[in-house]
Image 1 (cartoon, rainbow, N blue to C red):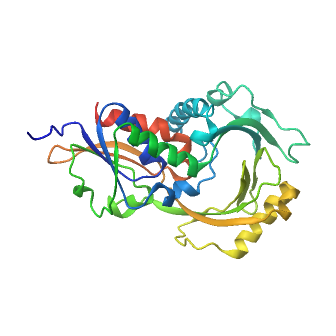
Image 2: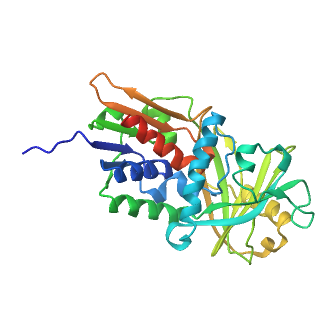
Image 3: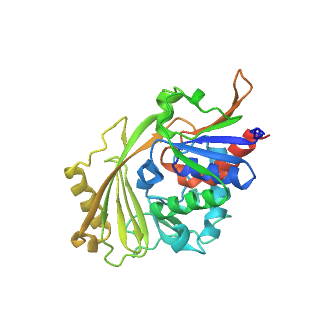
Length: 317
């Protein structure tokens, strides 16, 4: 007897957007397969910082809703940090004024306050936010998906039409540029330096508008993630030693103890930037449904759960 495939879904892409979407769909009772060119550990998501904050994501109104929905999930996951990779960590957003934050976030994060001179030399905002250890979190998402009955297949997709299922969800990130094709998707290259953690427990971000550089220090129990760069339309995945030295120097200017920290790794990731997230439903001529969920830039982790739930709603509205 032939199996009823009416509830089948193929999610293309295994980054944080793809896996989170696959989890939501599988836990709603669908038969979900993830098709991925590479394992989650090889995606851009694995290289992400990854601090929750709705930064440069459009459309802004929807992004706020997606971000707040995701925040609720991360707050719950932070109760099991070793398992989920999510911790609630305090730190300073430099060059950010508390009075410039809208009620949508100020009311949701009542602990927000202006930073003190001891915490940050310039104008800053102190916040307690989710900080995600991405390799741990991606492994946890994958295991949660598999426990929900999902399957993962290593497969390079050259045409979305290859995915023969009643519902296909396109979570291919930068790959959507060629796969859709969508020339609006372009890379924003980010370089990171991973060093031993000399005892830093709070994160910090600092913006130098004149130099166009954002510097950040994200602490994890076993390491610090130092950044960063935002090189638009740059495709190279090879770390630049000179840029790495600059990143360490900028971070050490904020936290002097970083200067002597041993370097563990150099990483590069290509953020899938777009003028706005594409989250929409497309009805194919053969009656199949294609849902696009890509173009999150560097904010994928911030909006992942909100976007996943909306994508699932679009697939089965």
